[in-house]
Amino acid sequence: MADITDEVQSFFNKEIETYKKEHAERKDEKNFAIFLFLCLKYFFYDDSTIDFSDDEIWGQICDKANDGSIDAICNDTSSDTKDIVFIQSKYLITSSLDKTTVIGEVKEIFDTENQLLNRQTANYNDNLVTLFYEAMDEASPYIQKNSSVKYFTSYVPKKKEAMKLKEYLFDNYKDKAEIFFGDEIKERFETCQTANNIVSNGEFNIDNTSNSLSYKDSIMVNISALSIKDAFLRRKRSLLGLNLRYFIKSPAIDSGIKKTITATPEKFWFFNNGLVFICDDYSLSGRVLTLTNYSIINGGQTTELIGKTNFLTDFFIPCKVIKNSGQYGDDFATEVAKATNSQKPIKAKDLKANTPEQKALGIELERLGVQYVIKSGDKIRKEFSDTSKHTNLEQIGKLGMAAMLQYPGYARNAMAKMFDDDKYYRIFKDTDPQIYVDLLKIDTLYRYFISSSKAKSTANYEITRNARTFVIGAISYLSFIMQFGAFEQLAKIQIDSGLPNGDYKALQDGLISKMHCIIVNRCDDERDLFINLFIDICGFIADRYDAMYEGKSEDERVSPSNYLKSNEKQIAILKKINQEMLKSGTTFVNTASRLFSVDN
Image (cartoon, rainbow, N blue to C red; front, side, top):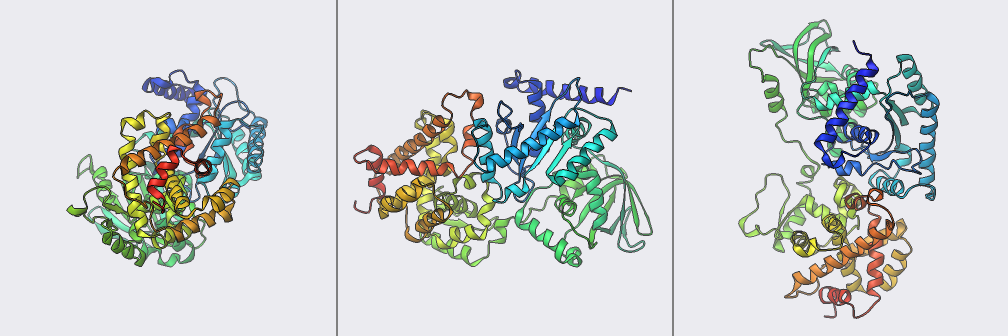
């Protein structure tokens, strides 16, 4: 039998060569860089609800000079607060990894974080700095309490050595620092790549001795939550090997499940749909259920939340245990998984469908000629078939976040934030519905624009293609200062001073309380006027992007898609608009005046 180190090394060599063959554009990448990329992919992006391209994952890497020992930065999309994760990796072929190196690098990473939190950026490369603040913007405002370090290495030490290092990190950093060795990383890769993972055996406690309901050679039981938690802590995602998907985060539902687990566990059995196991065989002796070659094929959300939530009081979960005896065919497990996962999950928007503010908004929008689709399954009526004549909760939320709250980064990447009370009611209750009628028209025009030759001939088409929410926010602000003459007082002072939190709220208050429309004047050449504004504002963004990376190679630049993830980029755009509006007679000012000036 091959030495485990040789086996692991051979596995990684094969993975890296396969990736190079399948991605010709990356064939010249160093092996350590591809190892790092694969760790990012399989540990952080394999089950995200957001679709990430390979280029976006590569964009999280900042492994260059002056990187503060940080090789990559990402947000943990499986956490409620999208915690920042700092990654360090060591792809070792022949040498070993000593404890001193790991300890020193982990300490340096946390020192780097403290420096960046205090805006001490001079000693670090631009890519690292940009990635850090983009991750900060996407994460919880208390991120310094939730950040962590994940250390990946292909090295496989002896068990005693590995345990000592893991214990040291835990003793000094608790769950804020963790190391993964080559054999563990190999197992994770294989788990993510394989669709037919099963657990060979497991034991679970049930509520009462021999309490079960039989159907043919399968049973229903009530399984102890502590038993599920114990299995999750030992097996992690391999428990869900035959499931159609892993855990998908749904904040509104997840918070309800967690609250029941911690506050009223005795109600969990009544509120939860339960789990479905499939196995080759099972036995029930007293209160112990033993499963052989099993997997959870429905209930991934429940399983992961039980596994990750701290609780002391045990409770029970209804569970169906299906014995796959072969009598129903080779694809029986897949058929059961499809059937039991086929029901549509309740989304956060569904929970808002019957609320007073949603009904009121729907009535007002229809009065203004726009059909508002609130409930899943509602049909768009023929008279509203034009794209600017119908909308839904998600689109209104996106437009409101970008235009009225000036959070275009959230509108692109963190739409769940629109359900926070401080944002939700401002978007759906406090904003004049006419504004959304106008924004729908502008949004439709922008979608037309980005597919046109004019957009493709702009200075940086990738900026133009990704800037929709930023442009919509900028145009709303432009209309605001044209209608109310606000740029002399509010815009010039507050925007140019950097908009501290209080002033940012003042801007939002002004937009929501004063504005009753975006498009003040109806012009025959309205489409052309808006396209000219789109081109100018995209040019402002592209100029800022180029200035930030002046003299830098393409490899040192953050991709336009990643660049436009941060709300903070909007401040630079608003500053530029202020500067342009202080001029007179320019094409930009004349175009804005025709559309938005109350004097026309």
